[in-house]
Image (cartoon, rainbow, N blue to C red; front, top):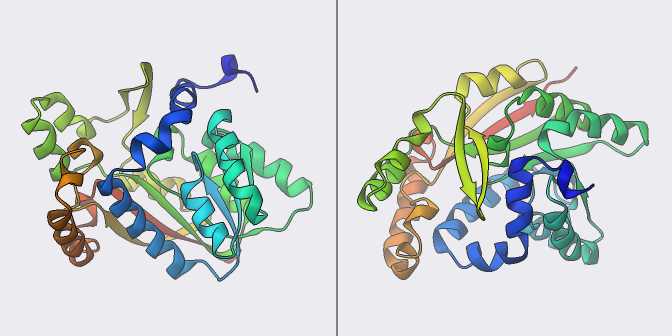
Length: 271
């Protein structure tokens, strides 16, 4: 795949891939949210199961799962991200392939035609699906590749995040504070690349998946743990962040809609 064929969002993440881990990996707010997601994944995925990741980036979560015995196939639209992820995964016998979320249905057709086994679970962390305008292709692709009864754990941006509103207002960026209220495509920028994101509403997400999946629950990720916009300040206050993590543990279910991210736990229907 050539760079000219990449989507604007894939180009942005491809450009930042070489420094992605060093830039975001040290941020404690990111780590706190990642730990919350991992705990949820381990509750739902069968031990040493075959797991698909959508939009896996540099493979931080995939390599974590692979290291404890899962067989993981990571997909991501950025060739550079996939190259970095592959280096992490190969030692554990897992794989990484280039595939954009909007192309997941075509990927599933090729995958199933090759006769490979279905997956015991799937996940997507830190909102790569917000770069996909039509979630229908994602739903159809996952439906083809997941075993009946398998969990699909999808983490998307929340659409009302008070923590971000407060942080961005204090930073003097009021337009950023309320960007998630926008319906349709919203502008985004990373590594000097412009692209668009969509803050998918709950009803829209459920509608896209309802033919093949049942929504079991939503979990707020970062209800009180602040978004990355609070970095690097929040990383300099680990005790405060620890308190916020504990509060998140209490509020993640009743106030899921107020999370920086929201984990949608779907279950593949018995067809």
